[in-house]
Image 1: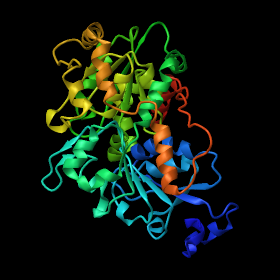
Image 2: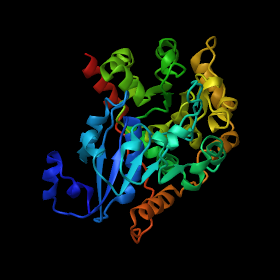
Image 3: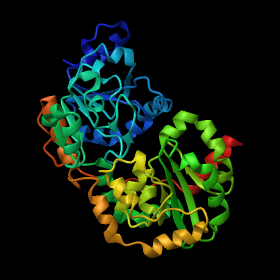
Image 4: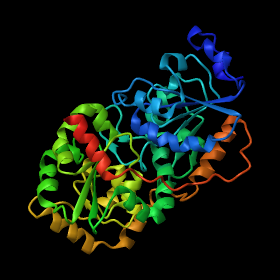
Length: 407
């Protein structure tokens, strides 16, 4: 019986009037906007199956400010967190561990970015973020399954939480597969973005945290404004959603207001950045997931920083940090981008890209099989499709939004 119809809580009673009842119910736990965007691709695997009802909930989280708006945009059924922890579900999906020990459902945990790039040095919980015991067994409770993108993660899990190995499934990476499927559409995305006259699209990518590009934007922004001739380059700034949530959307827009006035587009946190990355001519990025996914494209990469202490030494980000050239404070930015392009050797980056997923093109197949097995249902009788990314809005539309909001 559906969890929605089983509850006796008055606040849920109205859901007994559902038209379709006794469905298998999947709870999607959205801690942050970054986690939610990651999970949406997975939900496409449940489309058109009338046996399954998907519902959402949002636990309290320091970076959760953007989540309510995101869920409203999806139009899904949203349960308050206090309600969700009192109910039972047939399956739960989460890209973060916080509070998951309180959910009554077989749980699948997934990474929320490319591989597991960050190393933590806290006294209580050192290790690789996402692969520590408290990450894969929240509250000491083992999940039904841990989904990882690459076989290399198994050795890390064996060190930190060996009892979870029998529950671990190497399924691949959904973002890897969507980007790979979209590479032939690069020219289409560039036209949609409004790139003309041979101008080179420079994607300026930042993760979050003190060692990120954004942590040094006070020094980088003047260079984007003053050192990149508008006739040759079109920069677009892509900042991790945690920066927007942590500092507040108004504040981030205010900090970047001059960029907007000068025609430098700022991708809003809710937008799909992946088509923009596919369209890039050059990537100016840090040690975050977006820069790593850039190795799937043919865009040369210039690293704004690669803090050794913060990077998981076994991750492809560590290899990228010694492969891509590093931004210098003493040479002109345009000249350094030209140098990165001249020195770019595609073969040096294909090995890094291959480390993102050991199941390239097979995430949908593997993940759907896992979910339906845990749901106790047979899979739909058709192959799951990996569709190319939709066309992005024009860069000028994002620039105009920033002008209006900050004005």
